[in-house]
Length: 196
Image 1 (cartoon, rainbow, N blue to C red):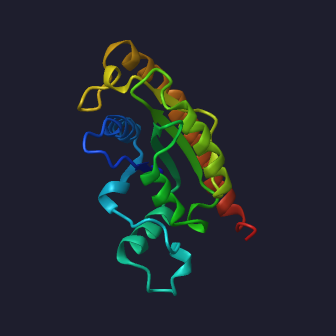
Image 2 (cartoon, one colour):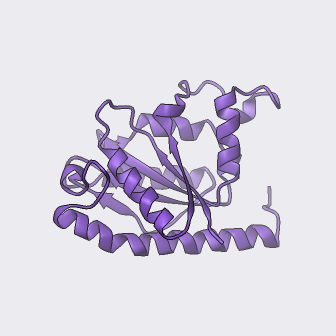
């Protein structure tokens, strides 16, 4: 049986390079038989955080928030595809994530980072690790970092050059770790209800 995985991406730039990596992750996870849905922060277009989803009276949240809450609650795990902006995380993805809290609980999250340079978004990945943990997710230890992204993935999201070969080699371990944690979390949630 396949796992339901949301791949979340947050760039609002007009020339989005990270979409290549999001497409790569989506295609490879689907190739492993997973049920993958793409969540694009720019396409959803949530306003800057004023009220979290849980702060709306039941049934009164804006339609986009209500739909996304259901998608998050229905997922078995998450992959956050993040660029690095000035040593930090992308504001678009962070804003989308912050609209929710309990909806994320008790599911694993994996981080895939990228940058135009050789550090592959490592500083953003580090920042996301603590943030996602604080939001109730188990962050898997395997990560993927891609950089320079333009020399690693084609516009279609297919690996190119030596960086692309390295990405192809690292992906199976990354996906195996995510799947292990998804299955462990599903088994635990089925065994007993979360403590709060």
